[in-house]
Length: 592
Image (cartoon, rainbow, N blue to C red; front, side, top):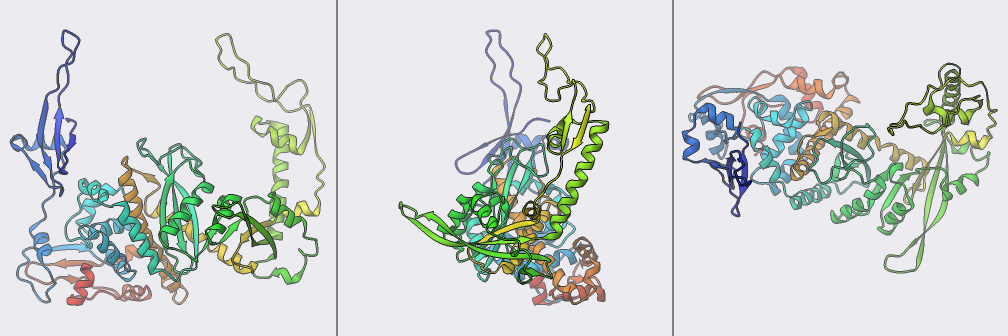
């Protein structure tokens, strides 16, 4: 198969051609390659073949692999030409179809209630229906690659009236401009103006491409041996919806992304909002930046050995950790609040300002006991290793807990090299001549530190309210699980940066739909046992049995809906579709 090359002109047209092999001439120069032209792609995406391409056989055209624009069927063409849906039996419909309707109808109605479709239509009026259809595909088919959307779209009722071609996905994703994305996020945040706390976290997504400008080798908790891209998500505590997303290079740590996040929030006009971060973002620089920008925050301390935290902990007495007034019987924690003074420089000046900062110190006796038990079990395992088969990688742990006499062998010997300079393998480490455990003398303060964790805040003077808000961070952690598992964004399968950015944005739209459905399922499970028996996958599968069908010269109908399905729709605050569609129901179904 010949390799198809592209050449883009100033007017937006793209010429498709292939080049033959070059031959070496007698004088050492290379001959010019023969160029064969096949046609061009217009700015609107239409492929215009030339006379040579038309003269080729079907087999030769298939071998070239040029994606021609699929022509819509007669039914799809007539549906697209209809301005309004007509009740009754439209005579102009020539052929029938039957498509899955219940599961896509669920997400279409959620998008309409959240005004996601209206915002998409505002900024992408020519392709908003296709973008929403791709988001629904990613929500329903987390295991499938995006190029499989073409056969799937032919069997499902979607917001778009025409089929989705896998060959045109790149052009569709390339149509999403960065300015429009930022304006969409600003309007989306303005619709949730009542949010007073954003839970913020980041995660890494692996990529197989070496041409993405943001793909870098960095820290990855999943230990993937591939470059990564960091994605930052802000989640609303009240609405349980994602409100902001941004991508960063994979080698930028969490601490350095804080400044970019603060500037993005300022650009989206998000102010007077409390941000909740985990310990990866806790640093003196970040705390000073948040105070300078007048943001409220709750931060988990990264280490208990930091000077101002260590000083606050050392000032506490044993009576503070045994006072019943500071104990919460539900959480089974002790909570103590202290106030410190934080000095920071004024921007553009050499003067210093001070602000009060609340240090919430929590002591969990069960966590301290569990860590102590785990440490004792580790010591017993290391003792068993020393007797049978020592491991060189555990030498640091051996020296920490045991007094060891290795005899004649040197476990820390440097590697040796042969005459050719090759590194020789070290001999196997033998059990030591003798060893004994070091006495474990732990003070009460050392034991207590195993059960301590600290939160820093400039907005919450109550330690239990700060603890409650921080525990809400599991929503953003769950959002990343949905992005990776239910939306299929664990691996980025594209080598073009604009396409990757657009795909992350569409995944953000899909995450909004999934998060809202999860919230409604959790709210419905409190009042009904019906939803408790379903996961999100089984719930969508339950609705997928509802089909929409049409016979030639007839109106569109819905297959019978069971009482269980009607109850599920009502519990999820969605009106069940009617068997025969009226004007209003047809309008809601077509999402027009």
